[in-house]
Amino acid sequence: MSAEVFDVVVVGAGLSGVGASVHLGKHCPDKSYVILEAREAIGGTWDLFRYPGIRSDSDMYTLGYAFKPWTEQKAIADGPSIRAYVNDTARDYGIDKHIRFKQSVRRISWDSHAARWTVEVEHEGVLKRYETKFVLMCAGYYRYDHGYLPDFPGYERFKGRVVHPQHWPEDLDYANKRVIVIGSGATAVTLVPSMADKAAHVTMLQRSPTYMISMPAVDKLAHGLRRILPAQAAYDVIRFLRITMQQLFFRLARARPKRTRERLLGLVEDQIGPDAVRKHFTPRYNPWEERLCLVPDNDMFAAIKEGKASVVTDQIESFTEKGVKLKSGQELEADIIVTATGLALQMLGGAEVFVDGKKVETGQSYAYKGAMLSDVPNLAFVFGYTNASWTLRADLISEYVCRLINYMDEYGLASATPRVGARRLEERPFVDFSSGYFKRVAHLLPKQTTTAPWKQNQSYLHDLMDLRFGAVEDGVLEFKRAAPAQADRTPAPAFAK
Image 1 (tube, rainbow, N blue to C red):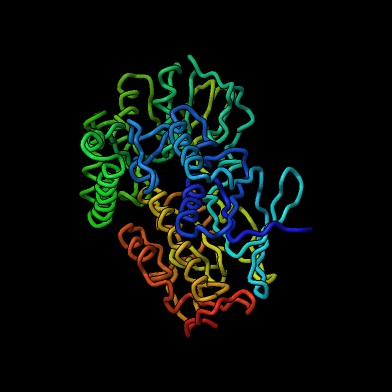
Image 2: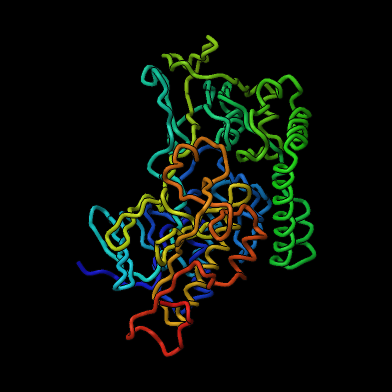
């Protein structure tokens, strides 16, 4: 079977993949590339999720690309607006011409002798192959075909309709219906106020509370700056301020958890009173041990105060014909149950990865700069921040990949492989969060350590200095020369083998 050949294969045409491709076009203009997208549309998460009220849980001045100002009115944007933003970026930079749709990557295999990856994809039931020097995985960290659903006892007994937000039915009519939303994460917090205006009543059923923080959907400072500065300059200023505030708040929360906890709970108490906070909004963990939930313009608190929504904190004993029976003995009746129970995570888009015939077990690998895997050459993956906007880190990783590709070209190098060597490393989980969806797949996530470059930093400033300005050659990346026919006449540095 013949294979198409490209310098770079990008997997995924969502927010990360489109952004990465813009960086390739800017910094590696002589490189050919293709974007392989498993679905039929651009946008990734923002095209897949269509549930009521779908929106960002980060402000668009940091979730947006550094090179393309966000100019819409709302900083906390709805899904269709974000989808349009990604599509506009792909069109404006000519990225859409490089996308191959319905291309589900099944297996990628590295051949050290040829210094190439073979990428095997399934396209409408037919196997296709691509060959490339470098693979950039921008497929996110969760499965698109299904979300996470706990094994609820009696699930099949319920006579109403059960839906998962990841696959929202277009025909779902919830007007004047009793709705239970199971979950307390960002999806549930979005769904409850969005459905409350039409539904008879919406109950958020949570096993345990989550920290919540309110933020205005519209940033008045950003609008003021746009009146006196060019769009890009205004965007850069507000982006810098937002990044700084995010990082300071995170560091403060980790350094002074008790004080941060009191402040967060106090803000919620101002909205709905101390009794509700004590019963339903006081988490068992410290701030930023899990991601905070954003409540734009206090919309969920308003729905609760108006009697359109309520919160119940309890555990599910079983589903019943009429709804859900709780361990306390209470039964919640419903016409519709929404299982906002989380994501099913995976690494590298679920593709199998082989290096010289040996399968790569991501859970046994170490993450180099949070972007490459130990002993895996010429492959990078985008994994954004858990304590800030995803795109901040996605942009930096894409820039780093371009630097690495250009560096190898300059010295006639064929491959770059992170090597742990004989170092004794103190292992840590890849994600320093207690969230259940990370714990469920801890065996799939690569490991990090306590020291660079094997440490997964949750610091934009640190990553900015390291990924954008740090030396490419650091004694950890092992470089190998290109074959004589491929190498140029520039002498390779002494560290190349």
